[in-house]
Length: 319
Ligand code: UDP
Ligand code: MG
Image 1 (cartoon, rainbow, N blue to C red):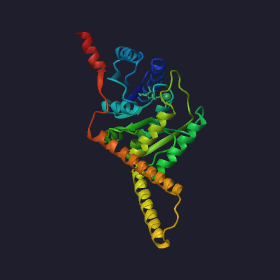
Image 2: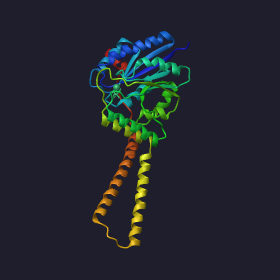
Image 3: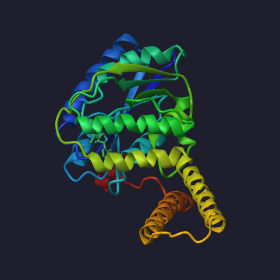
Image 4: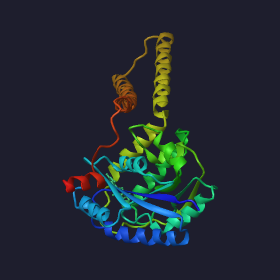
């Protein structure tokens, strides 16, 4: 049987505590797969997203111990989205898997994902959280509301609880790479490109070690990214609101003209001024969001910048 390469892509930001645990775990799983399917080969591509701890040192060690381990180190922190993109862009596999370093995405699911995808029935297998155990109640509430809102206003449907843990074919990887946008919202991109996806339902798993970099505000910002990247509904909403207020103003003028000079209280005027001022600000804000995004897109900045890979490191050491 012809050889097939599976690329394991792991974005890492300050993950020194879990990396060796992760390596043991992933090797256990992939060695098991190679035994069952001798034609399978693996490469492990770690993305060091500007970590401030010893992540890079550990990754250098991995690459020295085993030539299947590669890494890309960014010149600074570019965010997980950039990490995943760099992984996909630089992987060589016939299949690619993206998973977190903290073991919240259990590697033991990879064989099952491979089973779904290998016969061509599915192009992608991913995981979907069915419980939000261990997550603050308020956060769960906001997450759920986010999915409801975005699925109402955007044509790109985003599955509630779908994680970034995915096993996909080369065709799907290439499709994702063909989306060159700078403001990357993977949950939307995965769904926008289409393809047949099988979701495996999983329970929420806690981090094996280290700490999460997410907090409420970061998540809120991320959800707005998603809305502004995949829907223009907020912009339409501001147009509709503006239109309603113009109609209202016309109606009021007509009423004054017909009913004569009625007494309009000062407070009413102030209220109206505030109301209309507020709505204008709101609309300008919405518009500004899209202009800001457009601005970033037209600059065509790279999504990430590489400062070191296992190859450049080896070369430098030889000199
Ligand atoms: N991560 C990254 N860059 C960042 C933040 C996170 O590459 O700026 C990686 C991190 O190392 C981990 C994955 O993205 O492998 C998920 O991050 P985290 O566990 O902090 O998020 P959570 O699981 O809490 O959503
Ligand atoms: Mg995590």
